[in-house]
Length: 394
Ligand SMILES: Cc1cc2nc3c(=O)[nH]c(=O)nc-3n(C[C@H](O)[C@H](O)[C@H](O)COP(=O)(O)OP(=O)(O)OC[C@H]3O[C@@H](n4cnc5c(N)ncnc54)[C@H](O)[C@@H]3O)c2cc1C
Ligand code: HEM
Image (cartoon, rainbow, N blue to C red; front, side, top):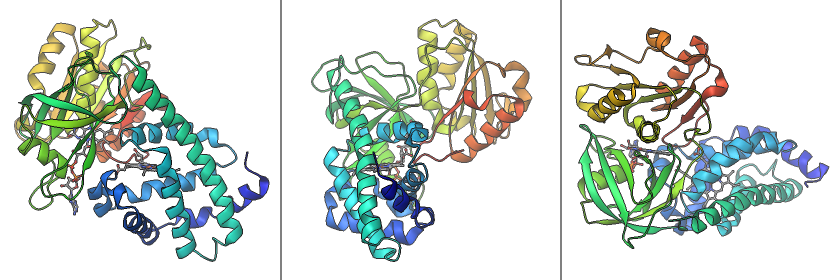
């Protein structure tokens, strides 16, 4: 337990942490990468350049300071972050490195607040928080190592099929080089993939949602080619252009707290935009393969017909299992609806009162879909979502 004095010192730093602007966050990462360049193999360096991930750590630390007397309210966030960390194979020894650079940064840039007593209090509080993550991550690693088909850290996989699903999205099916079974996963979870893209000085790890049902033998992911011109996404373009059937990569076991609740008997509503349909495909395939009696609704928005991934497969499953399918094209000739997804238009077909709603797509899409669902009368507790990057509260 933290003492009253430690808690008081930590709480006094909340304003500094909440206002930790780009100067502080950039200093922290520069400091850490110059002292510990080995961590460049773990962190997404494009997210560093664009500043996307930089704020996440400081926001989480500020939230911890705010709730230091009631850390249980952060349980959901801790679980999400721990799951994400395991997908980068974050290790216990990394916590002291991150904590050291964090406190040194705050002492260097906010010396008036981070005097000796406050720094000592934060060292204690950080150690306590790190212990929570280390325990949970240790349990996750151990459970995955011991389970049927399980492993810890990286395992070599070979590409056995590469199939275009639309203009920019291609599916990749991986089987373990050792020929063994693979860990089963919950539909909606993601795997970590580690590659060394041509032209990059470092290994890069990215997460991809599994896009098919779990079968204990192989994993399918479906990857959108990201970026244009000079700002090409590193890993997605590497996979599209360089990785061919027969090639090997390292995969990190399935993880993630966004998945289909298979205990629930409620109707399921899968709401996606663009490549955000990948976790929905895993859920849809799982529900259909299990002949689930639950009514299923599949709402999808994409740019146009050329970017409509899994069109034929969804039509086939919908025909066989009576799935309510609603599709929007933003441009070009409509298949069903044109423009942006308009939930009010199809509200009468949806289980507003008792459905379980799963959302995935770009943040502005999810923010809009969530507010449309709330407007339609859906209970907030029934809405679940996944961000394809550092989590942002909707
Ligand atoms: C839980 C989870 C699940 C995911 N599931 C999927 C999935 O199923 N399918 C899928 O396709 N993706 C998925 N993603 C996203 C995926 O992990 C990668 O983020 C994505 O493929 C982009 O990686 P990249 O290496 O190609 O691009 P990065 O190199 O990481 O670049 C990211 C973006 O920044 C742009 N960029 C690059 N340099 C700059 C610069 N200097 N300034 C401004 N912009 C720049 C790039 O063009 C690109 O659009 C998921 C992510 C998460 C967290
Ligand atoms: C108590 C300490 C830590 C806190 C509070 C913390 C917090 C966070 C948060 C909030 C995220 C974003 C998660 C998401 O939205 O999905 C994140 C991601 C991440 N964390 Fe941590 N973290 C801590 C320690 C560490 C350590 C020790 C490492 C390993 C060196 C690490 C590596 C990462 C990586 C690689 C990501 C993903 C980054 C990306 O997507 O670019 N973290 N962490």
